[in-house]
Structure formats: C-alpha cells, structure tokens
Image 1 (spheres, one colour):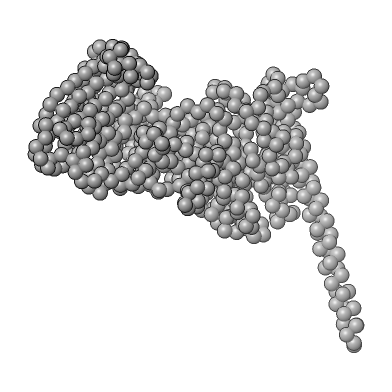
Image 2 (cartoon, one colour; image 1 turned 90 degrees about the vertical axis):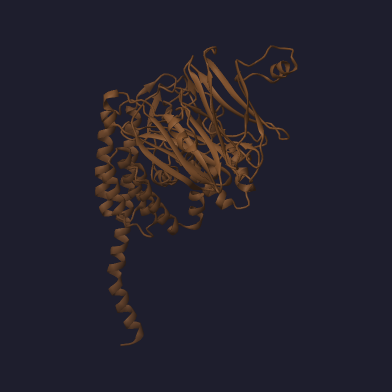
Length: 571
C-alpha cells in the first residue's frame, strides 16, 4: 500500500468526525440564537409591565453620555414600586430556559452572563453563586469576575476582592487596563491630582482606600462595586435592555459611573412618539464615594480640619450605595488631637442615632469606630459595640504624618443604616520646645478632667449645646516649662459666619463688640517641661439658639499669641 492509499483511508476515517463537529457547531449556534430570542422576549415583557409615570421623558439633562440623558430629580423620598408579578414570573421562566440551554452549550459565556445577571436581579444569590462556581468557561477569568460580582451583592466583600484579583490576573491586557482604572469615575480635579503625583499608582491606591464607605466593614466594597459594574457591563453586551436600544460604550460608562438602575418606569407616549420613554432609577441615597480634592492635603488656606461631608451643588461624576445599606448619614461629632513624643492622641465622641423602636436596642446594636488613614493605609483602627442613642467616646494613637483622613463611623447592620464623619487633617511632628496649642474639645457640662487620661470620659458628644448650659472646654499648651512664664488666657464667643467687613469694623471700633461671652485670666505656667492641660467653663445663659465659635487665645511675654477655635451650635 502506497502513501496515497494511507492518506485516503485516514481522510475517510476523519470525515464522520468532521461532519459531527460541524453539526455540533451548528447546534450550538442555534441554541445561542434561541437563548438571545428568549432574553429579548423577556425584556419586551418587562417593558409592557413597567409602572407608568406621567411625562417621564421631559427632564432636563444634567449630563448627556452618548445616547443617554442623566439627571438628578432631587426626589429624596422616591422608593421603587413593587415589581409586577408578570415580570417576576417572566424572569423565572427565562432563567429556567437558560439553565437548560446552558447544559447544551456550557462554554457560552454570553448565556452564563445572562444567568448570573438575572439571578442577582431576582435576589437568588445562592443560585447565582452556584452557577458562577460551576462556570467552566475557557480561560477562567470570566468565571472569577462573575463570582466576584455575586459575592459583592452577597456583601462578602473580602471574598469578592479575592475573586476579582484572580480575574485580573487572567484578563487580557486591554480588559485589565479598563477594569482596574478608576479614571472614568474620578472628577477632573482628582484626575489631575493623580497625574501630578510622583507615584500615580500609589495615588490611585490611596483613592480606593479613601473611597471605602465604611472601614467598620471588612473589605473595600467600593472597589468590588467598581469591578462588579464592569462585570455587569460584560454580561449586558449584545443583550436586550429596558431602554430598547443596543448596548454601547455609553451604556458601559453609565453603568461604571452610576451602577445599573434598581428599577425602571415608563411614560405614556407623547405626541409624535411611537413608543413610551423608559427611565431607569437609582436610589436617591447614593453618594459620592471619592473624597473632595480639599480632603487630600493642606490647601492654600491651611485651614483644618477639612470636613468631607458637605453639601454638593454640582452633578456628581459617580455615585454609589453599598448593598448592605439603605442610607449613609452624617455624624455630629467632636474630634481633637493632642501631641505626644512620637505620636498624636486622637479623640472622637458622638451620640449614635436612636433606634426606631427604643425597646429594640438589644436587637439592633451599633458598631462604632475611629479610624485614621495615612498614605493609603489605616494608621489607627479601633471599634466597639454601642447602643442606639448611646454615647461613643474613642481615642487612638496615631504616628506623626504630614496629612491624613480621620473617619468616625457608626453602623447598625440590622437596620441597614450608617453614619460617619470624615475629615482631612495634619498629624505633623511637634518640635520640642515649640509654643503651640492642641485642638479645643468640648466637655460635658460640669466635667473638669485633670489630664488627658481623664479627658476621653468627659468629652461632650457632638457640637450641639443646650441653651443655658455650661460650655466646658479642654486644651493643652506645649513648649512650656523651661522657665517660669506668666500666661495670659482669653476666651470669647462670637457669632459664626460673620463677614470680613463686620469683623474689621468691630476691631476698629466702628461697630459694637461681637463677643457674647468673654473670659480673661492670668496664670503661671508649668515648672517642668511637658503638656500643660487646662479646662475652662463658660455659661451660655445669654446666648440665643444659633451657631457660634469659641475663640481661645494664649499669650506669654516674648511669644507669639496662640489662637484656637471650636464651632458649636446652641439649641
């Protein structure tokens, strides 16, 4: 038998295999097309059953991203309507069909993406996780990404991080670059800050650390949310959606910046329109997770602390609400720094928000913590369990550093609510012998601690004082004790927000005195080096409800007069 005969026999043997493979490929294509048809039918069913709203397409856009109009309607009371039974049943039918089709084409990543996405949408997290763990797609990185997506929604953020980091290792380079960069969600000022940083990678890592909504919660859920949004976008490509237009880069950008809507509504068709307008809704409690640029370092004014939580007037570049929260509020808290050799003692105190039901406090404990970020890592991390409505008083030792961000947090997991106060501030080294003041901190009425060790238990929870009460204040003075010195103290209370011209007029004598309360005294300084701890008490009987500033000045012969301020509110 010659070589030609051998080849002919081999080709005849291979022909049935090739025909079988071709038939299998054709079956896979038909199965995939059928899956896409079923998915399209469900989204059409969803649209037909969406709740109606009047004139839903007439909003003025705060931003136009490609074909999409994005706006903030300011409706803080909006809540999603209950999903119609027809949509729930239709999604369950689709998922059952996709499960069967997935068994026929187990390597089809599009079908897996639909199963994961709709299972999470339905709240069937256990089924979604099981599907992601049975994934078996070639390469494996999509399996890890979908698993991270599910684990994020299950609030298992540490495991979600691990899954996404595994996905990143296996991604193609261009995909990895898109997914890991937060540039899409950063405003112009933060992008410039990153690009101007000597180490842009370290700057980005620090931004992700600061974007973590609660350090009380293990894992960085803002980072896993970012990766989850990319996972969602991956699953939504080439799939129908409620907006009735094909997925494109504009949809991806909106999904990465704001997440995917939690609910949709449709308006009645307007004159000249052939179909209704569909509006996607996010929860109004979503917030900006990345810090204002002023919080990242001492600005031109040098004023500190720089409070993170403040009213924002412009449209946010990106927003986020953790899956374990319904809201994130702001704490009314007191903070202070006291210098020691090699470190700073940071103190914080506040009253936790009350429980809706006062008798249920044991069932709804609050986790409370004090944290300090320095250079992208937590230099202080202390937490306790508190009662709703109870007073939290915490302190921590923090290394010297030019700048950092303090975070005071209270989280009630059972009630899905949290509050925090974040502020950028300096933690610089205090040279020996430098004449300086600590922060002023408010004390409970009548409290007179003798030193820093007794201070924490006497701190006033927050900056609001009852009218007619006694305002107690504590501070430390540094750089004294090398020689005998006579110190001059003055304390006065001024109305907050007084304009520059009025202040100058008062100082020049053209206007009356701004002081509501004034106290002055002389006192001999300490006889040995070390922090000089002092307290004072001021009656507020003559103050009307409103916002005020306590100003304390300390002087000594031959030294520059020191000044410290503390804002407070009289109610």
